[in-house]
Length: 94
Image (cartoon, rainbow, N blue to C red; front, side):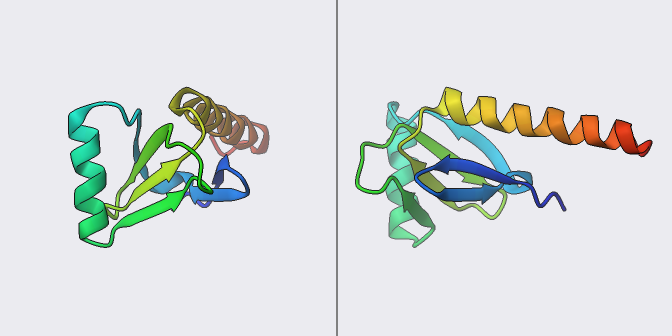
């Protein structure tokens, strides 16, 4: 399993290998998803009291709220993946 951590803002991190999707919270389906996760105790609020700007969905069906823009988190995710691939190539294992 991938154990790289992804910074989702304000000192909060998520294991990047567990992420299924990073989405914006504005649509009605995403609002329903958030409410269902809250009702089922699968919601993790990592906004530190700020406005929700992205929703992260994990393979364990947890829903994580972040105050960081989804584009920013996605960029961090891709950058971390690229860095990991470069390290593999440098070691000769990729």
